[in-house]
Image (cartoon, rainbow, N blue to C red; front, side, top):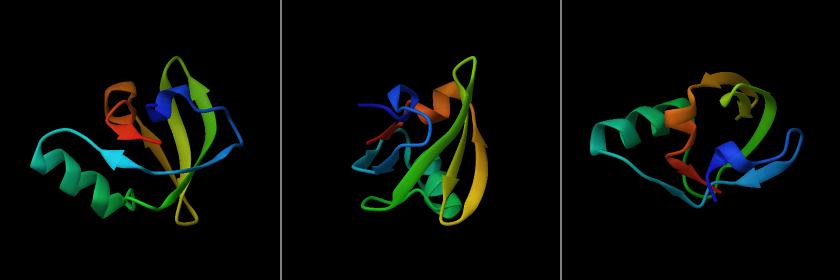
Length: 69
């Protein structure tokens, strides 16, 4: 399921990252790697604030939909 469907405060494991190579490399540079842990902190109209590798990152809904958990 995409990251946008995750519950706030729930720790999830990244299973797959979709999209073009450029998009996947960008997300990997932010810390979104397969097998990595991600926690949704807040959901504001589909846009997410997540905690990955002890860093808070804001993601648009379209970017979050490319991250499968």
